[in-house]
Amino acid sequence: MDTVVSGIRSTGNLHLGNYFGMVRNAVKMQYENKCYFFIADYHSLTTHPNPVDLHMNIKQVMAEYLACGIDPDIATLFIQSDVPEVCELYLLLNMNAYIGELERTTSFKEKVRKQPENVNAGLLTYPVLMAADIIIHRANKVPVGKDQEQHLEMTRKFARRFNTMHKVNYFPEPEAYNFGEELIKIPGLDGSGKMGKSEGNGIFLVDEPKTIRKKVMRAVTDTGPEKQGQEPSEPVKNLFTLMEVMSDPGTVEYFREKHASCEIRYGDMKKQLAEDMINFTTPIRERINEIMSDNNYLSKVVREGAEKARESAGKTMRDVREIIGYRSF
Ligand code: TYM
Image (cartoon, rainbow, N blue to C red; front, side, top):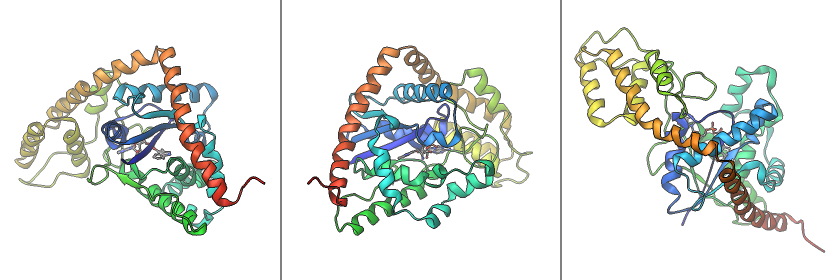
């Protein structure tokens, strides 16, 4: 049996990128593996949320995980900050993480470019905390989207470094996992890049049908193909990618043929895409709203999740302390 860990930052509602990049796989994996899924609420502190937003976002992501089908009786579903052991491992791993390698991380360089006014040390050591999250349960598989590939590479490096340094074979080297397929990148509706929480280019699981229609109808396209068989432009390719995950294969094929024969009407394609998104998200949205109003259930899930996660993390930390040389007299 494999041990699986993955997390989602609590910086906003879940969007289709989160769902198809991670949650869908997490749901599938929970039945056959030992799974730990969590809300990365320490990681979300790099954006300096106020206490009310932090609390509400954690609650929201918890409800969204549950509404998507994570079963807390099968998988361990927990909040990162309920497991302080992870901070200890983060500190220990930081001693062997080098400034140079952290500064070269793509996600860090992107943050430096995008938010030069808030380049905090938490951002620099973000991959170390993520490695701690994963290896504290000695996981070997991590369901994530394409954007997390480099973080997983760093996790392997930190795990290997620990093992080599202490001449042990304690931590497995975990792999990003997508059932043998390439990792996924779900594009946004703005013509380029990936769907994100803060990019304003996403469809959220809680979006109402009218919001979805409005967002999709505004999605960037082009002026239409000019030659038969022409490759779609980047923004149109993105719409097709979204359609491939949301719609049935016949629908995708129909619009591909219309594009190839220069008869496509992007308005029709968008209408279809919006309806397919609405059909997909509606039952999830309804469940999210139900769960959000059930505080008793949520607090039970959180309490039990924390207990199970701490048991596993605590065991690892006892071993790690022993390996490092923190021993009793
Ligand atoms: P976060 O919160 O940005 O995203 C959560 C998950 O959703 C995936 N994802 C996407 N996949 C495909 N297309 C997209 N457009 C898209 N946008 C997001 C992400 O790849 C991710 O799997 N650092 C992590 C949180 C984290 C974590 C961990 C993950 C903290 N510790 C340990 C795994 C293991 C993050 O920021 O994810």
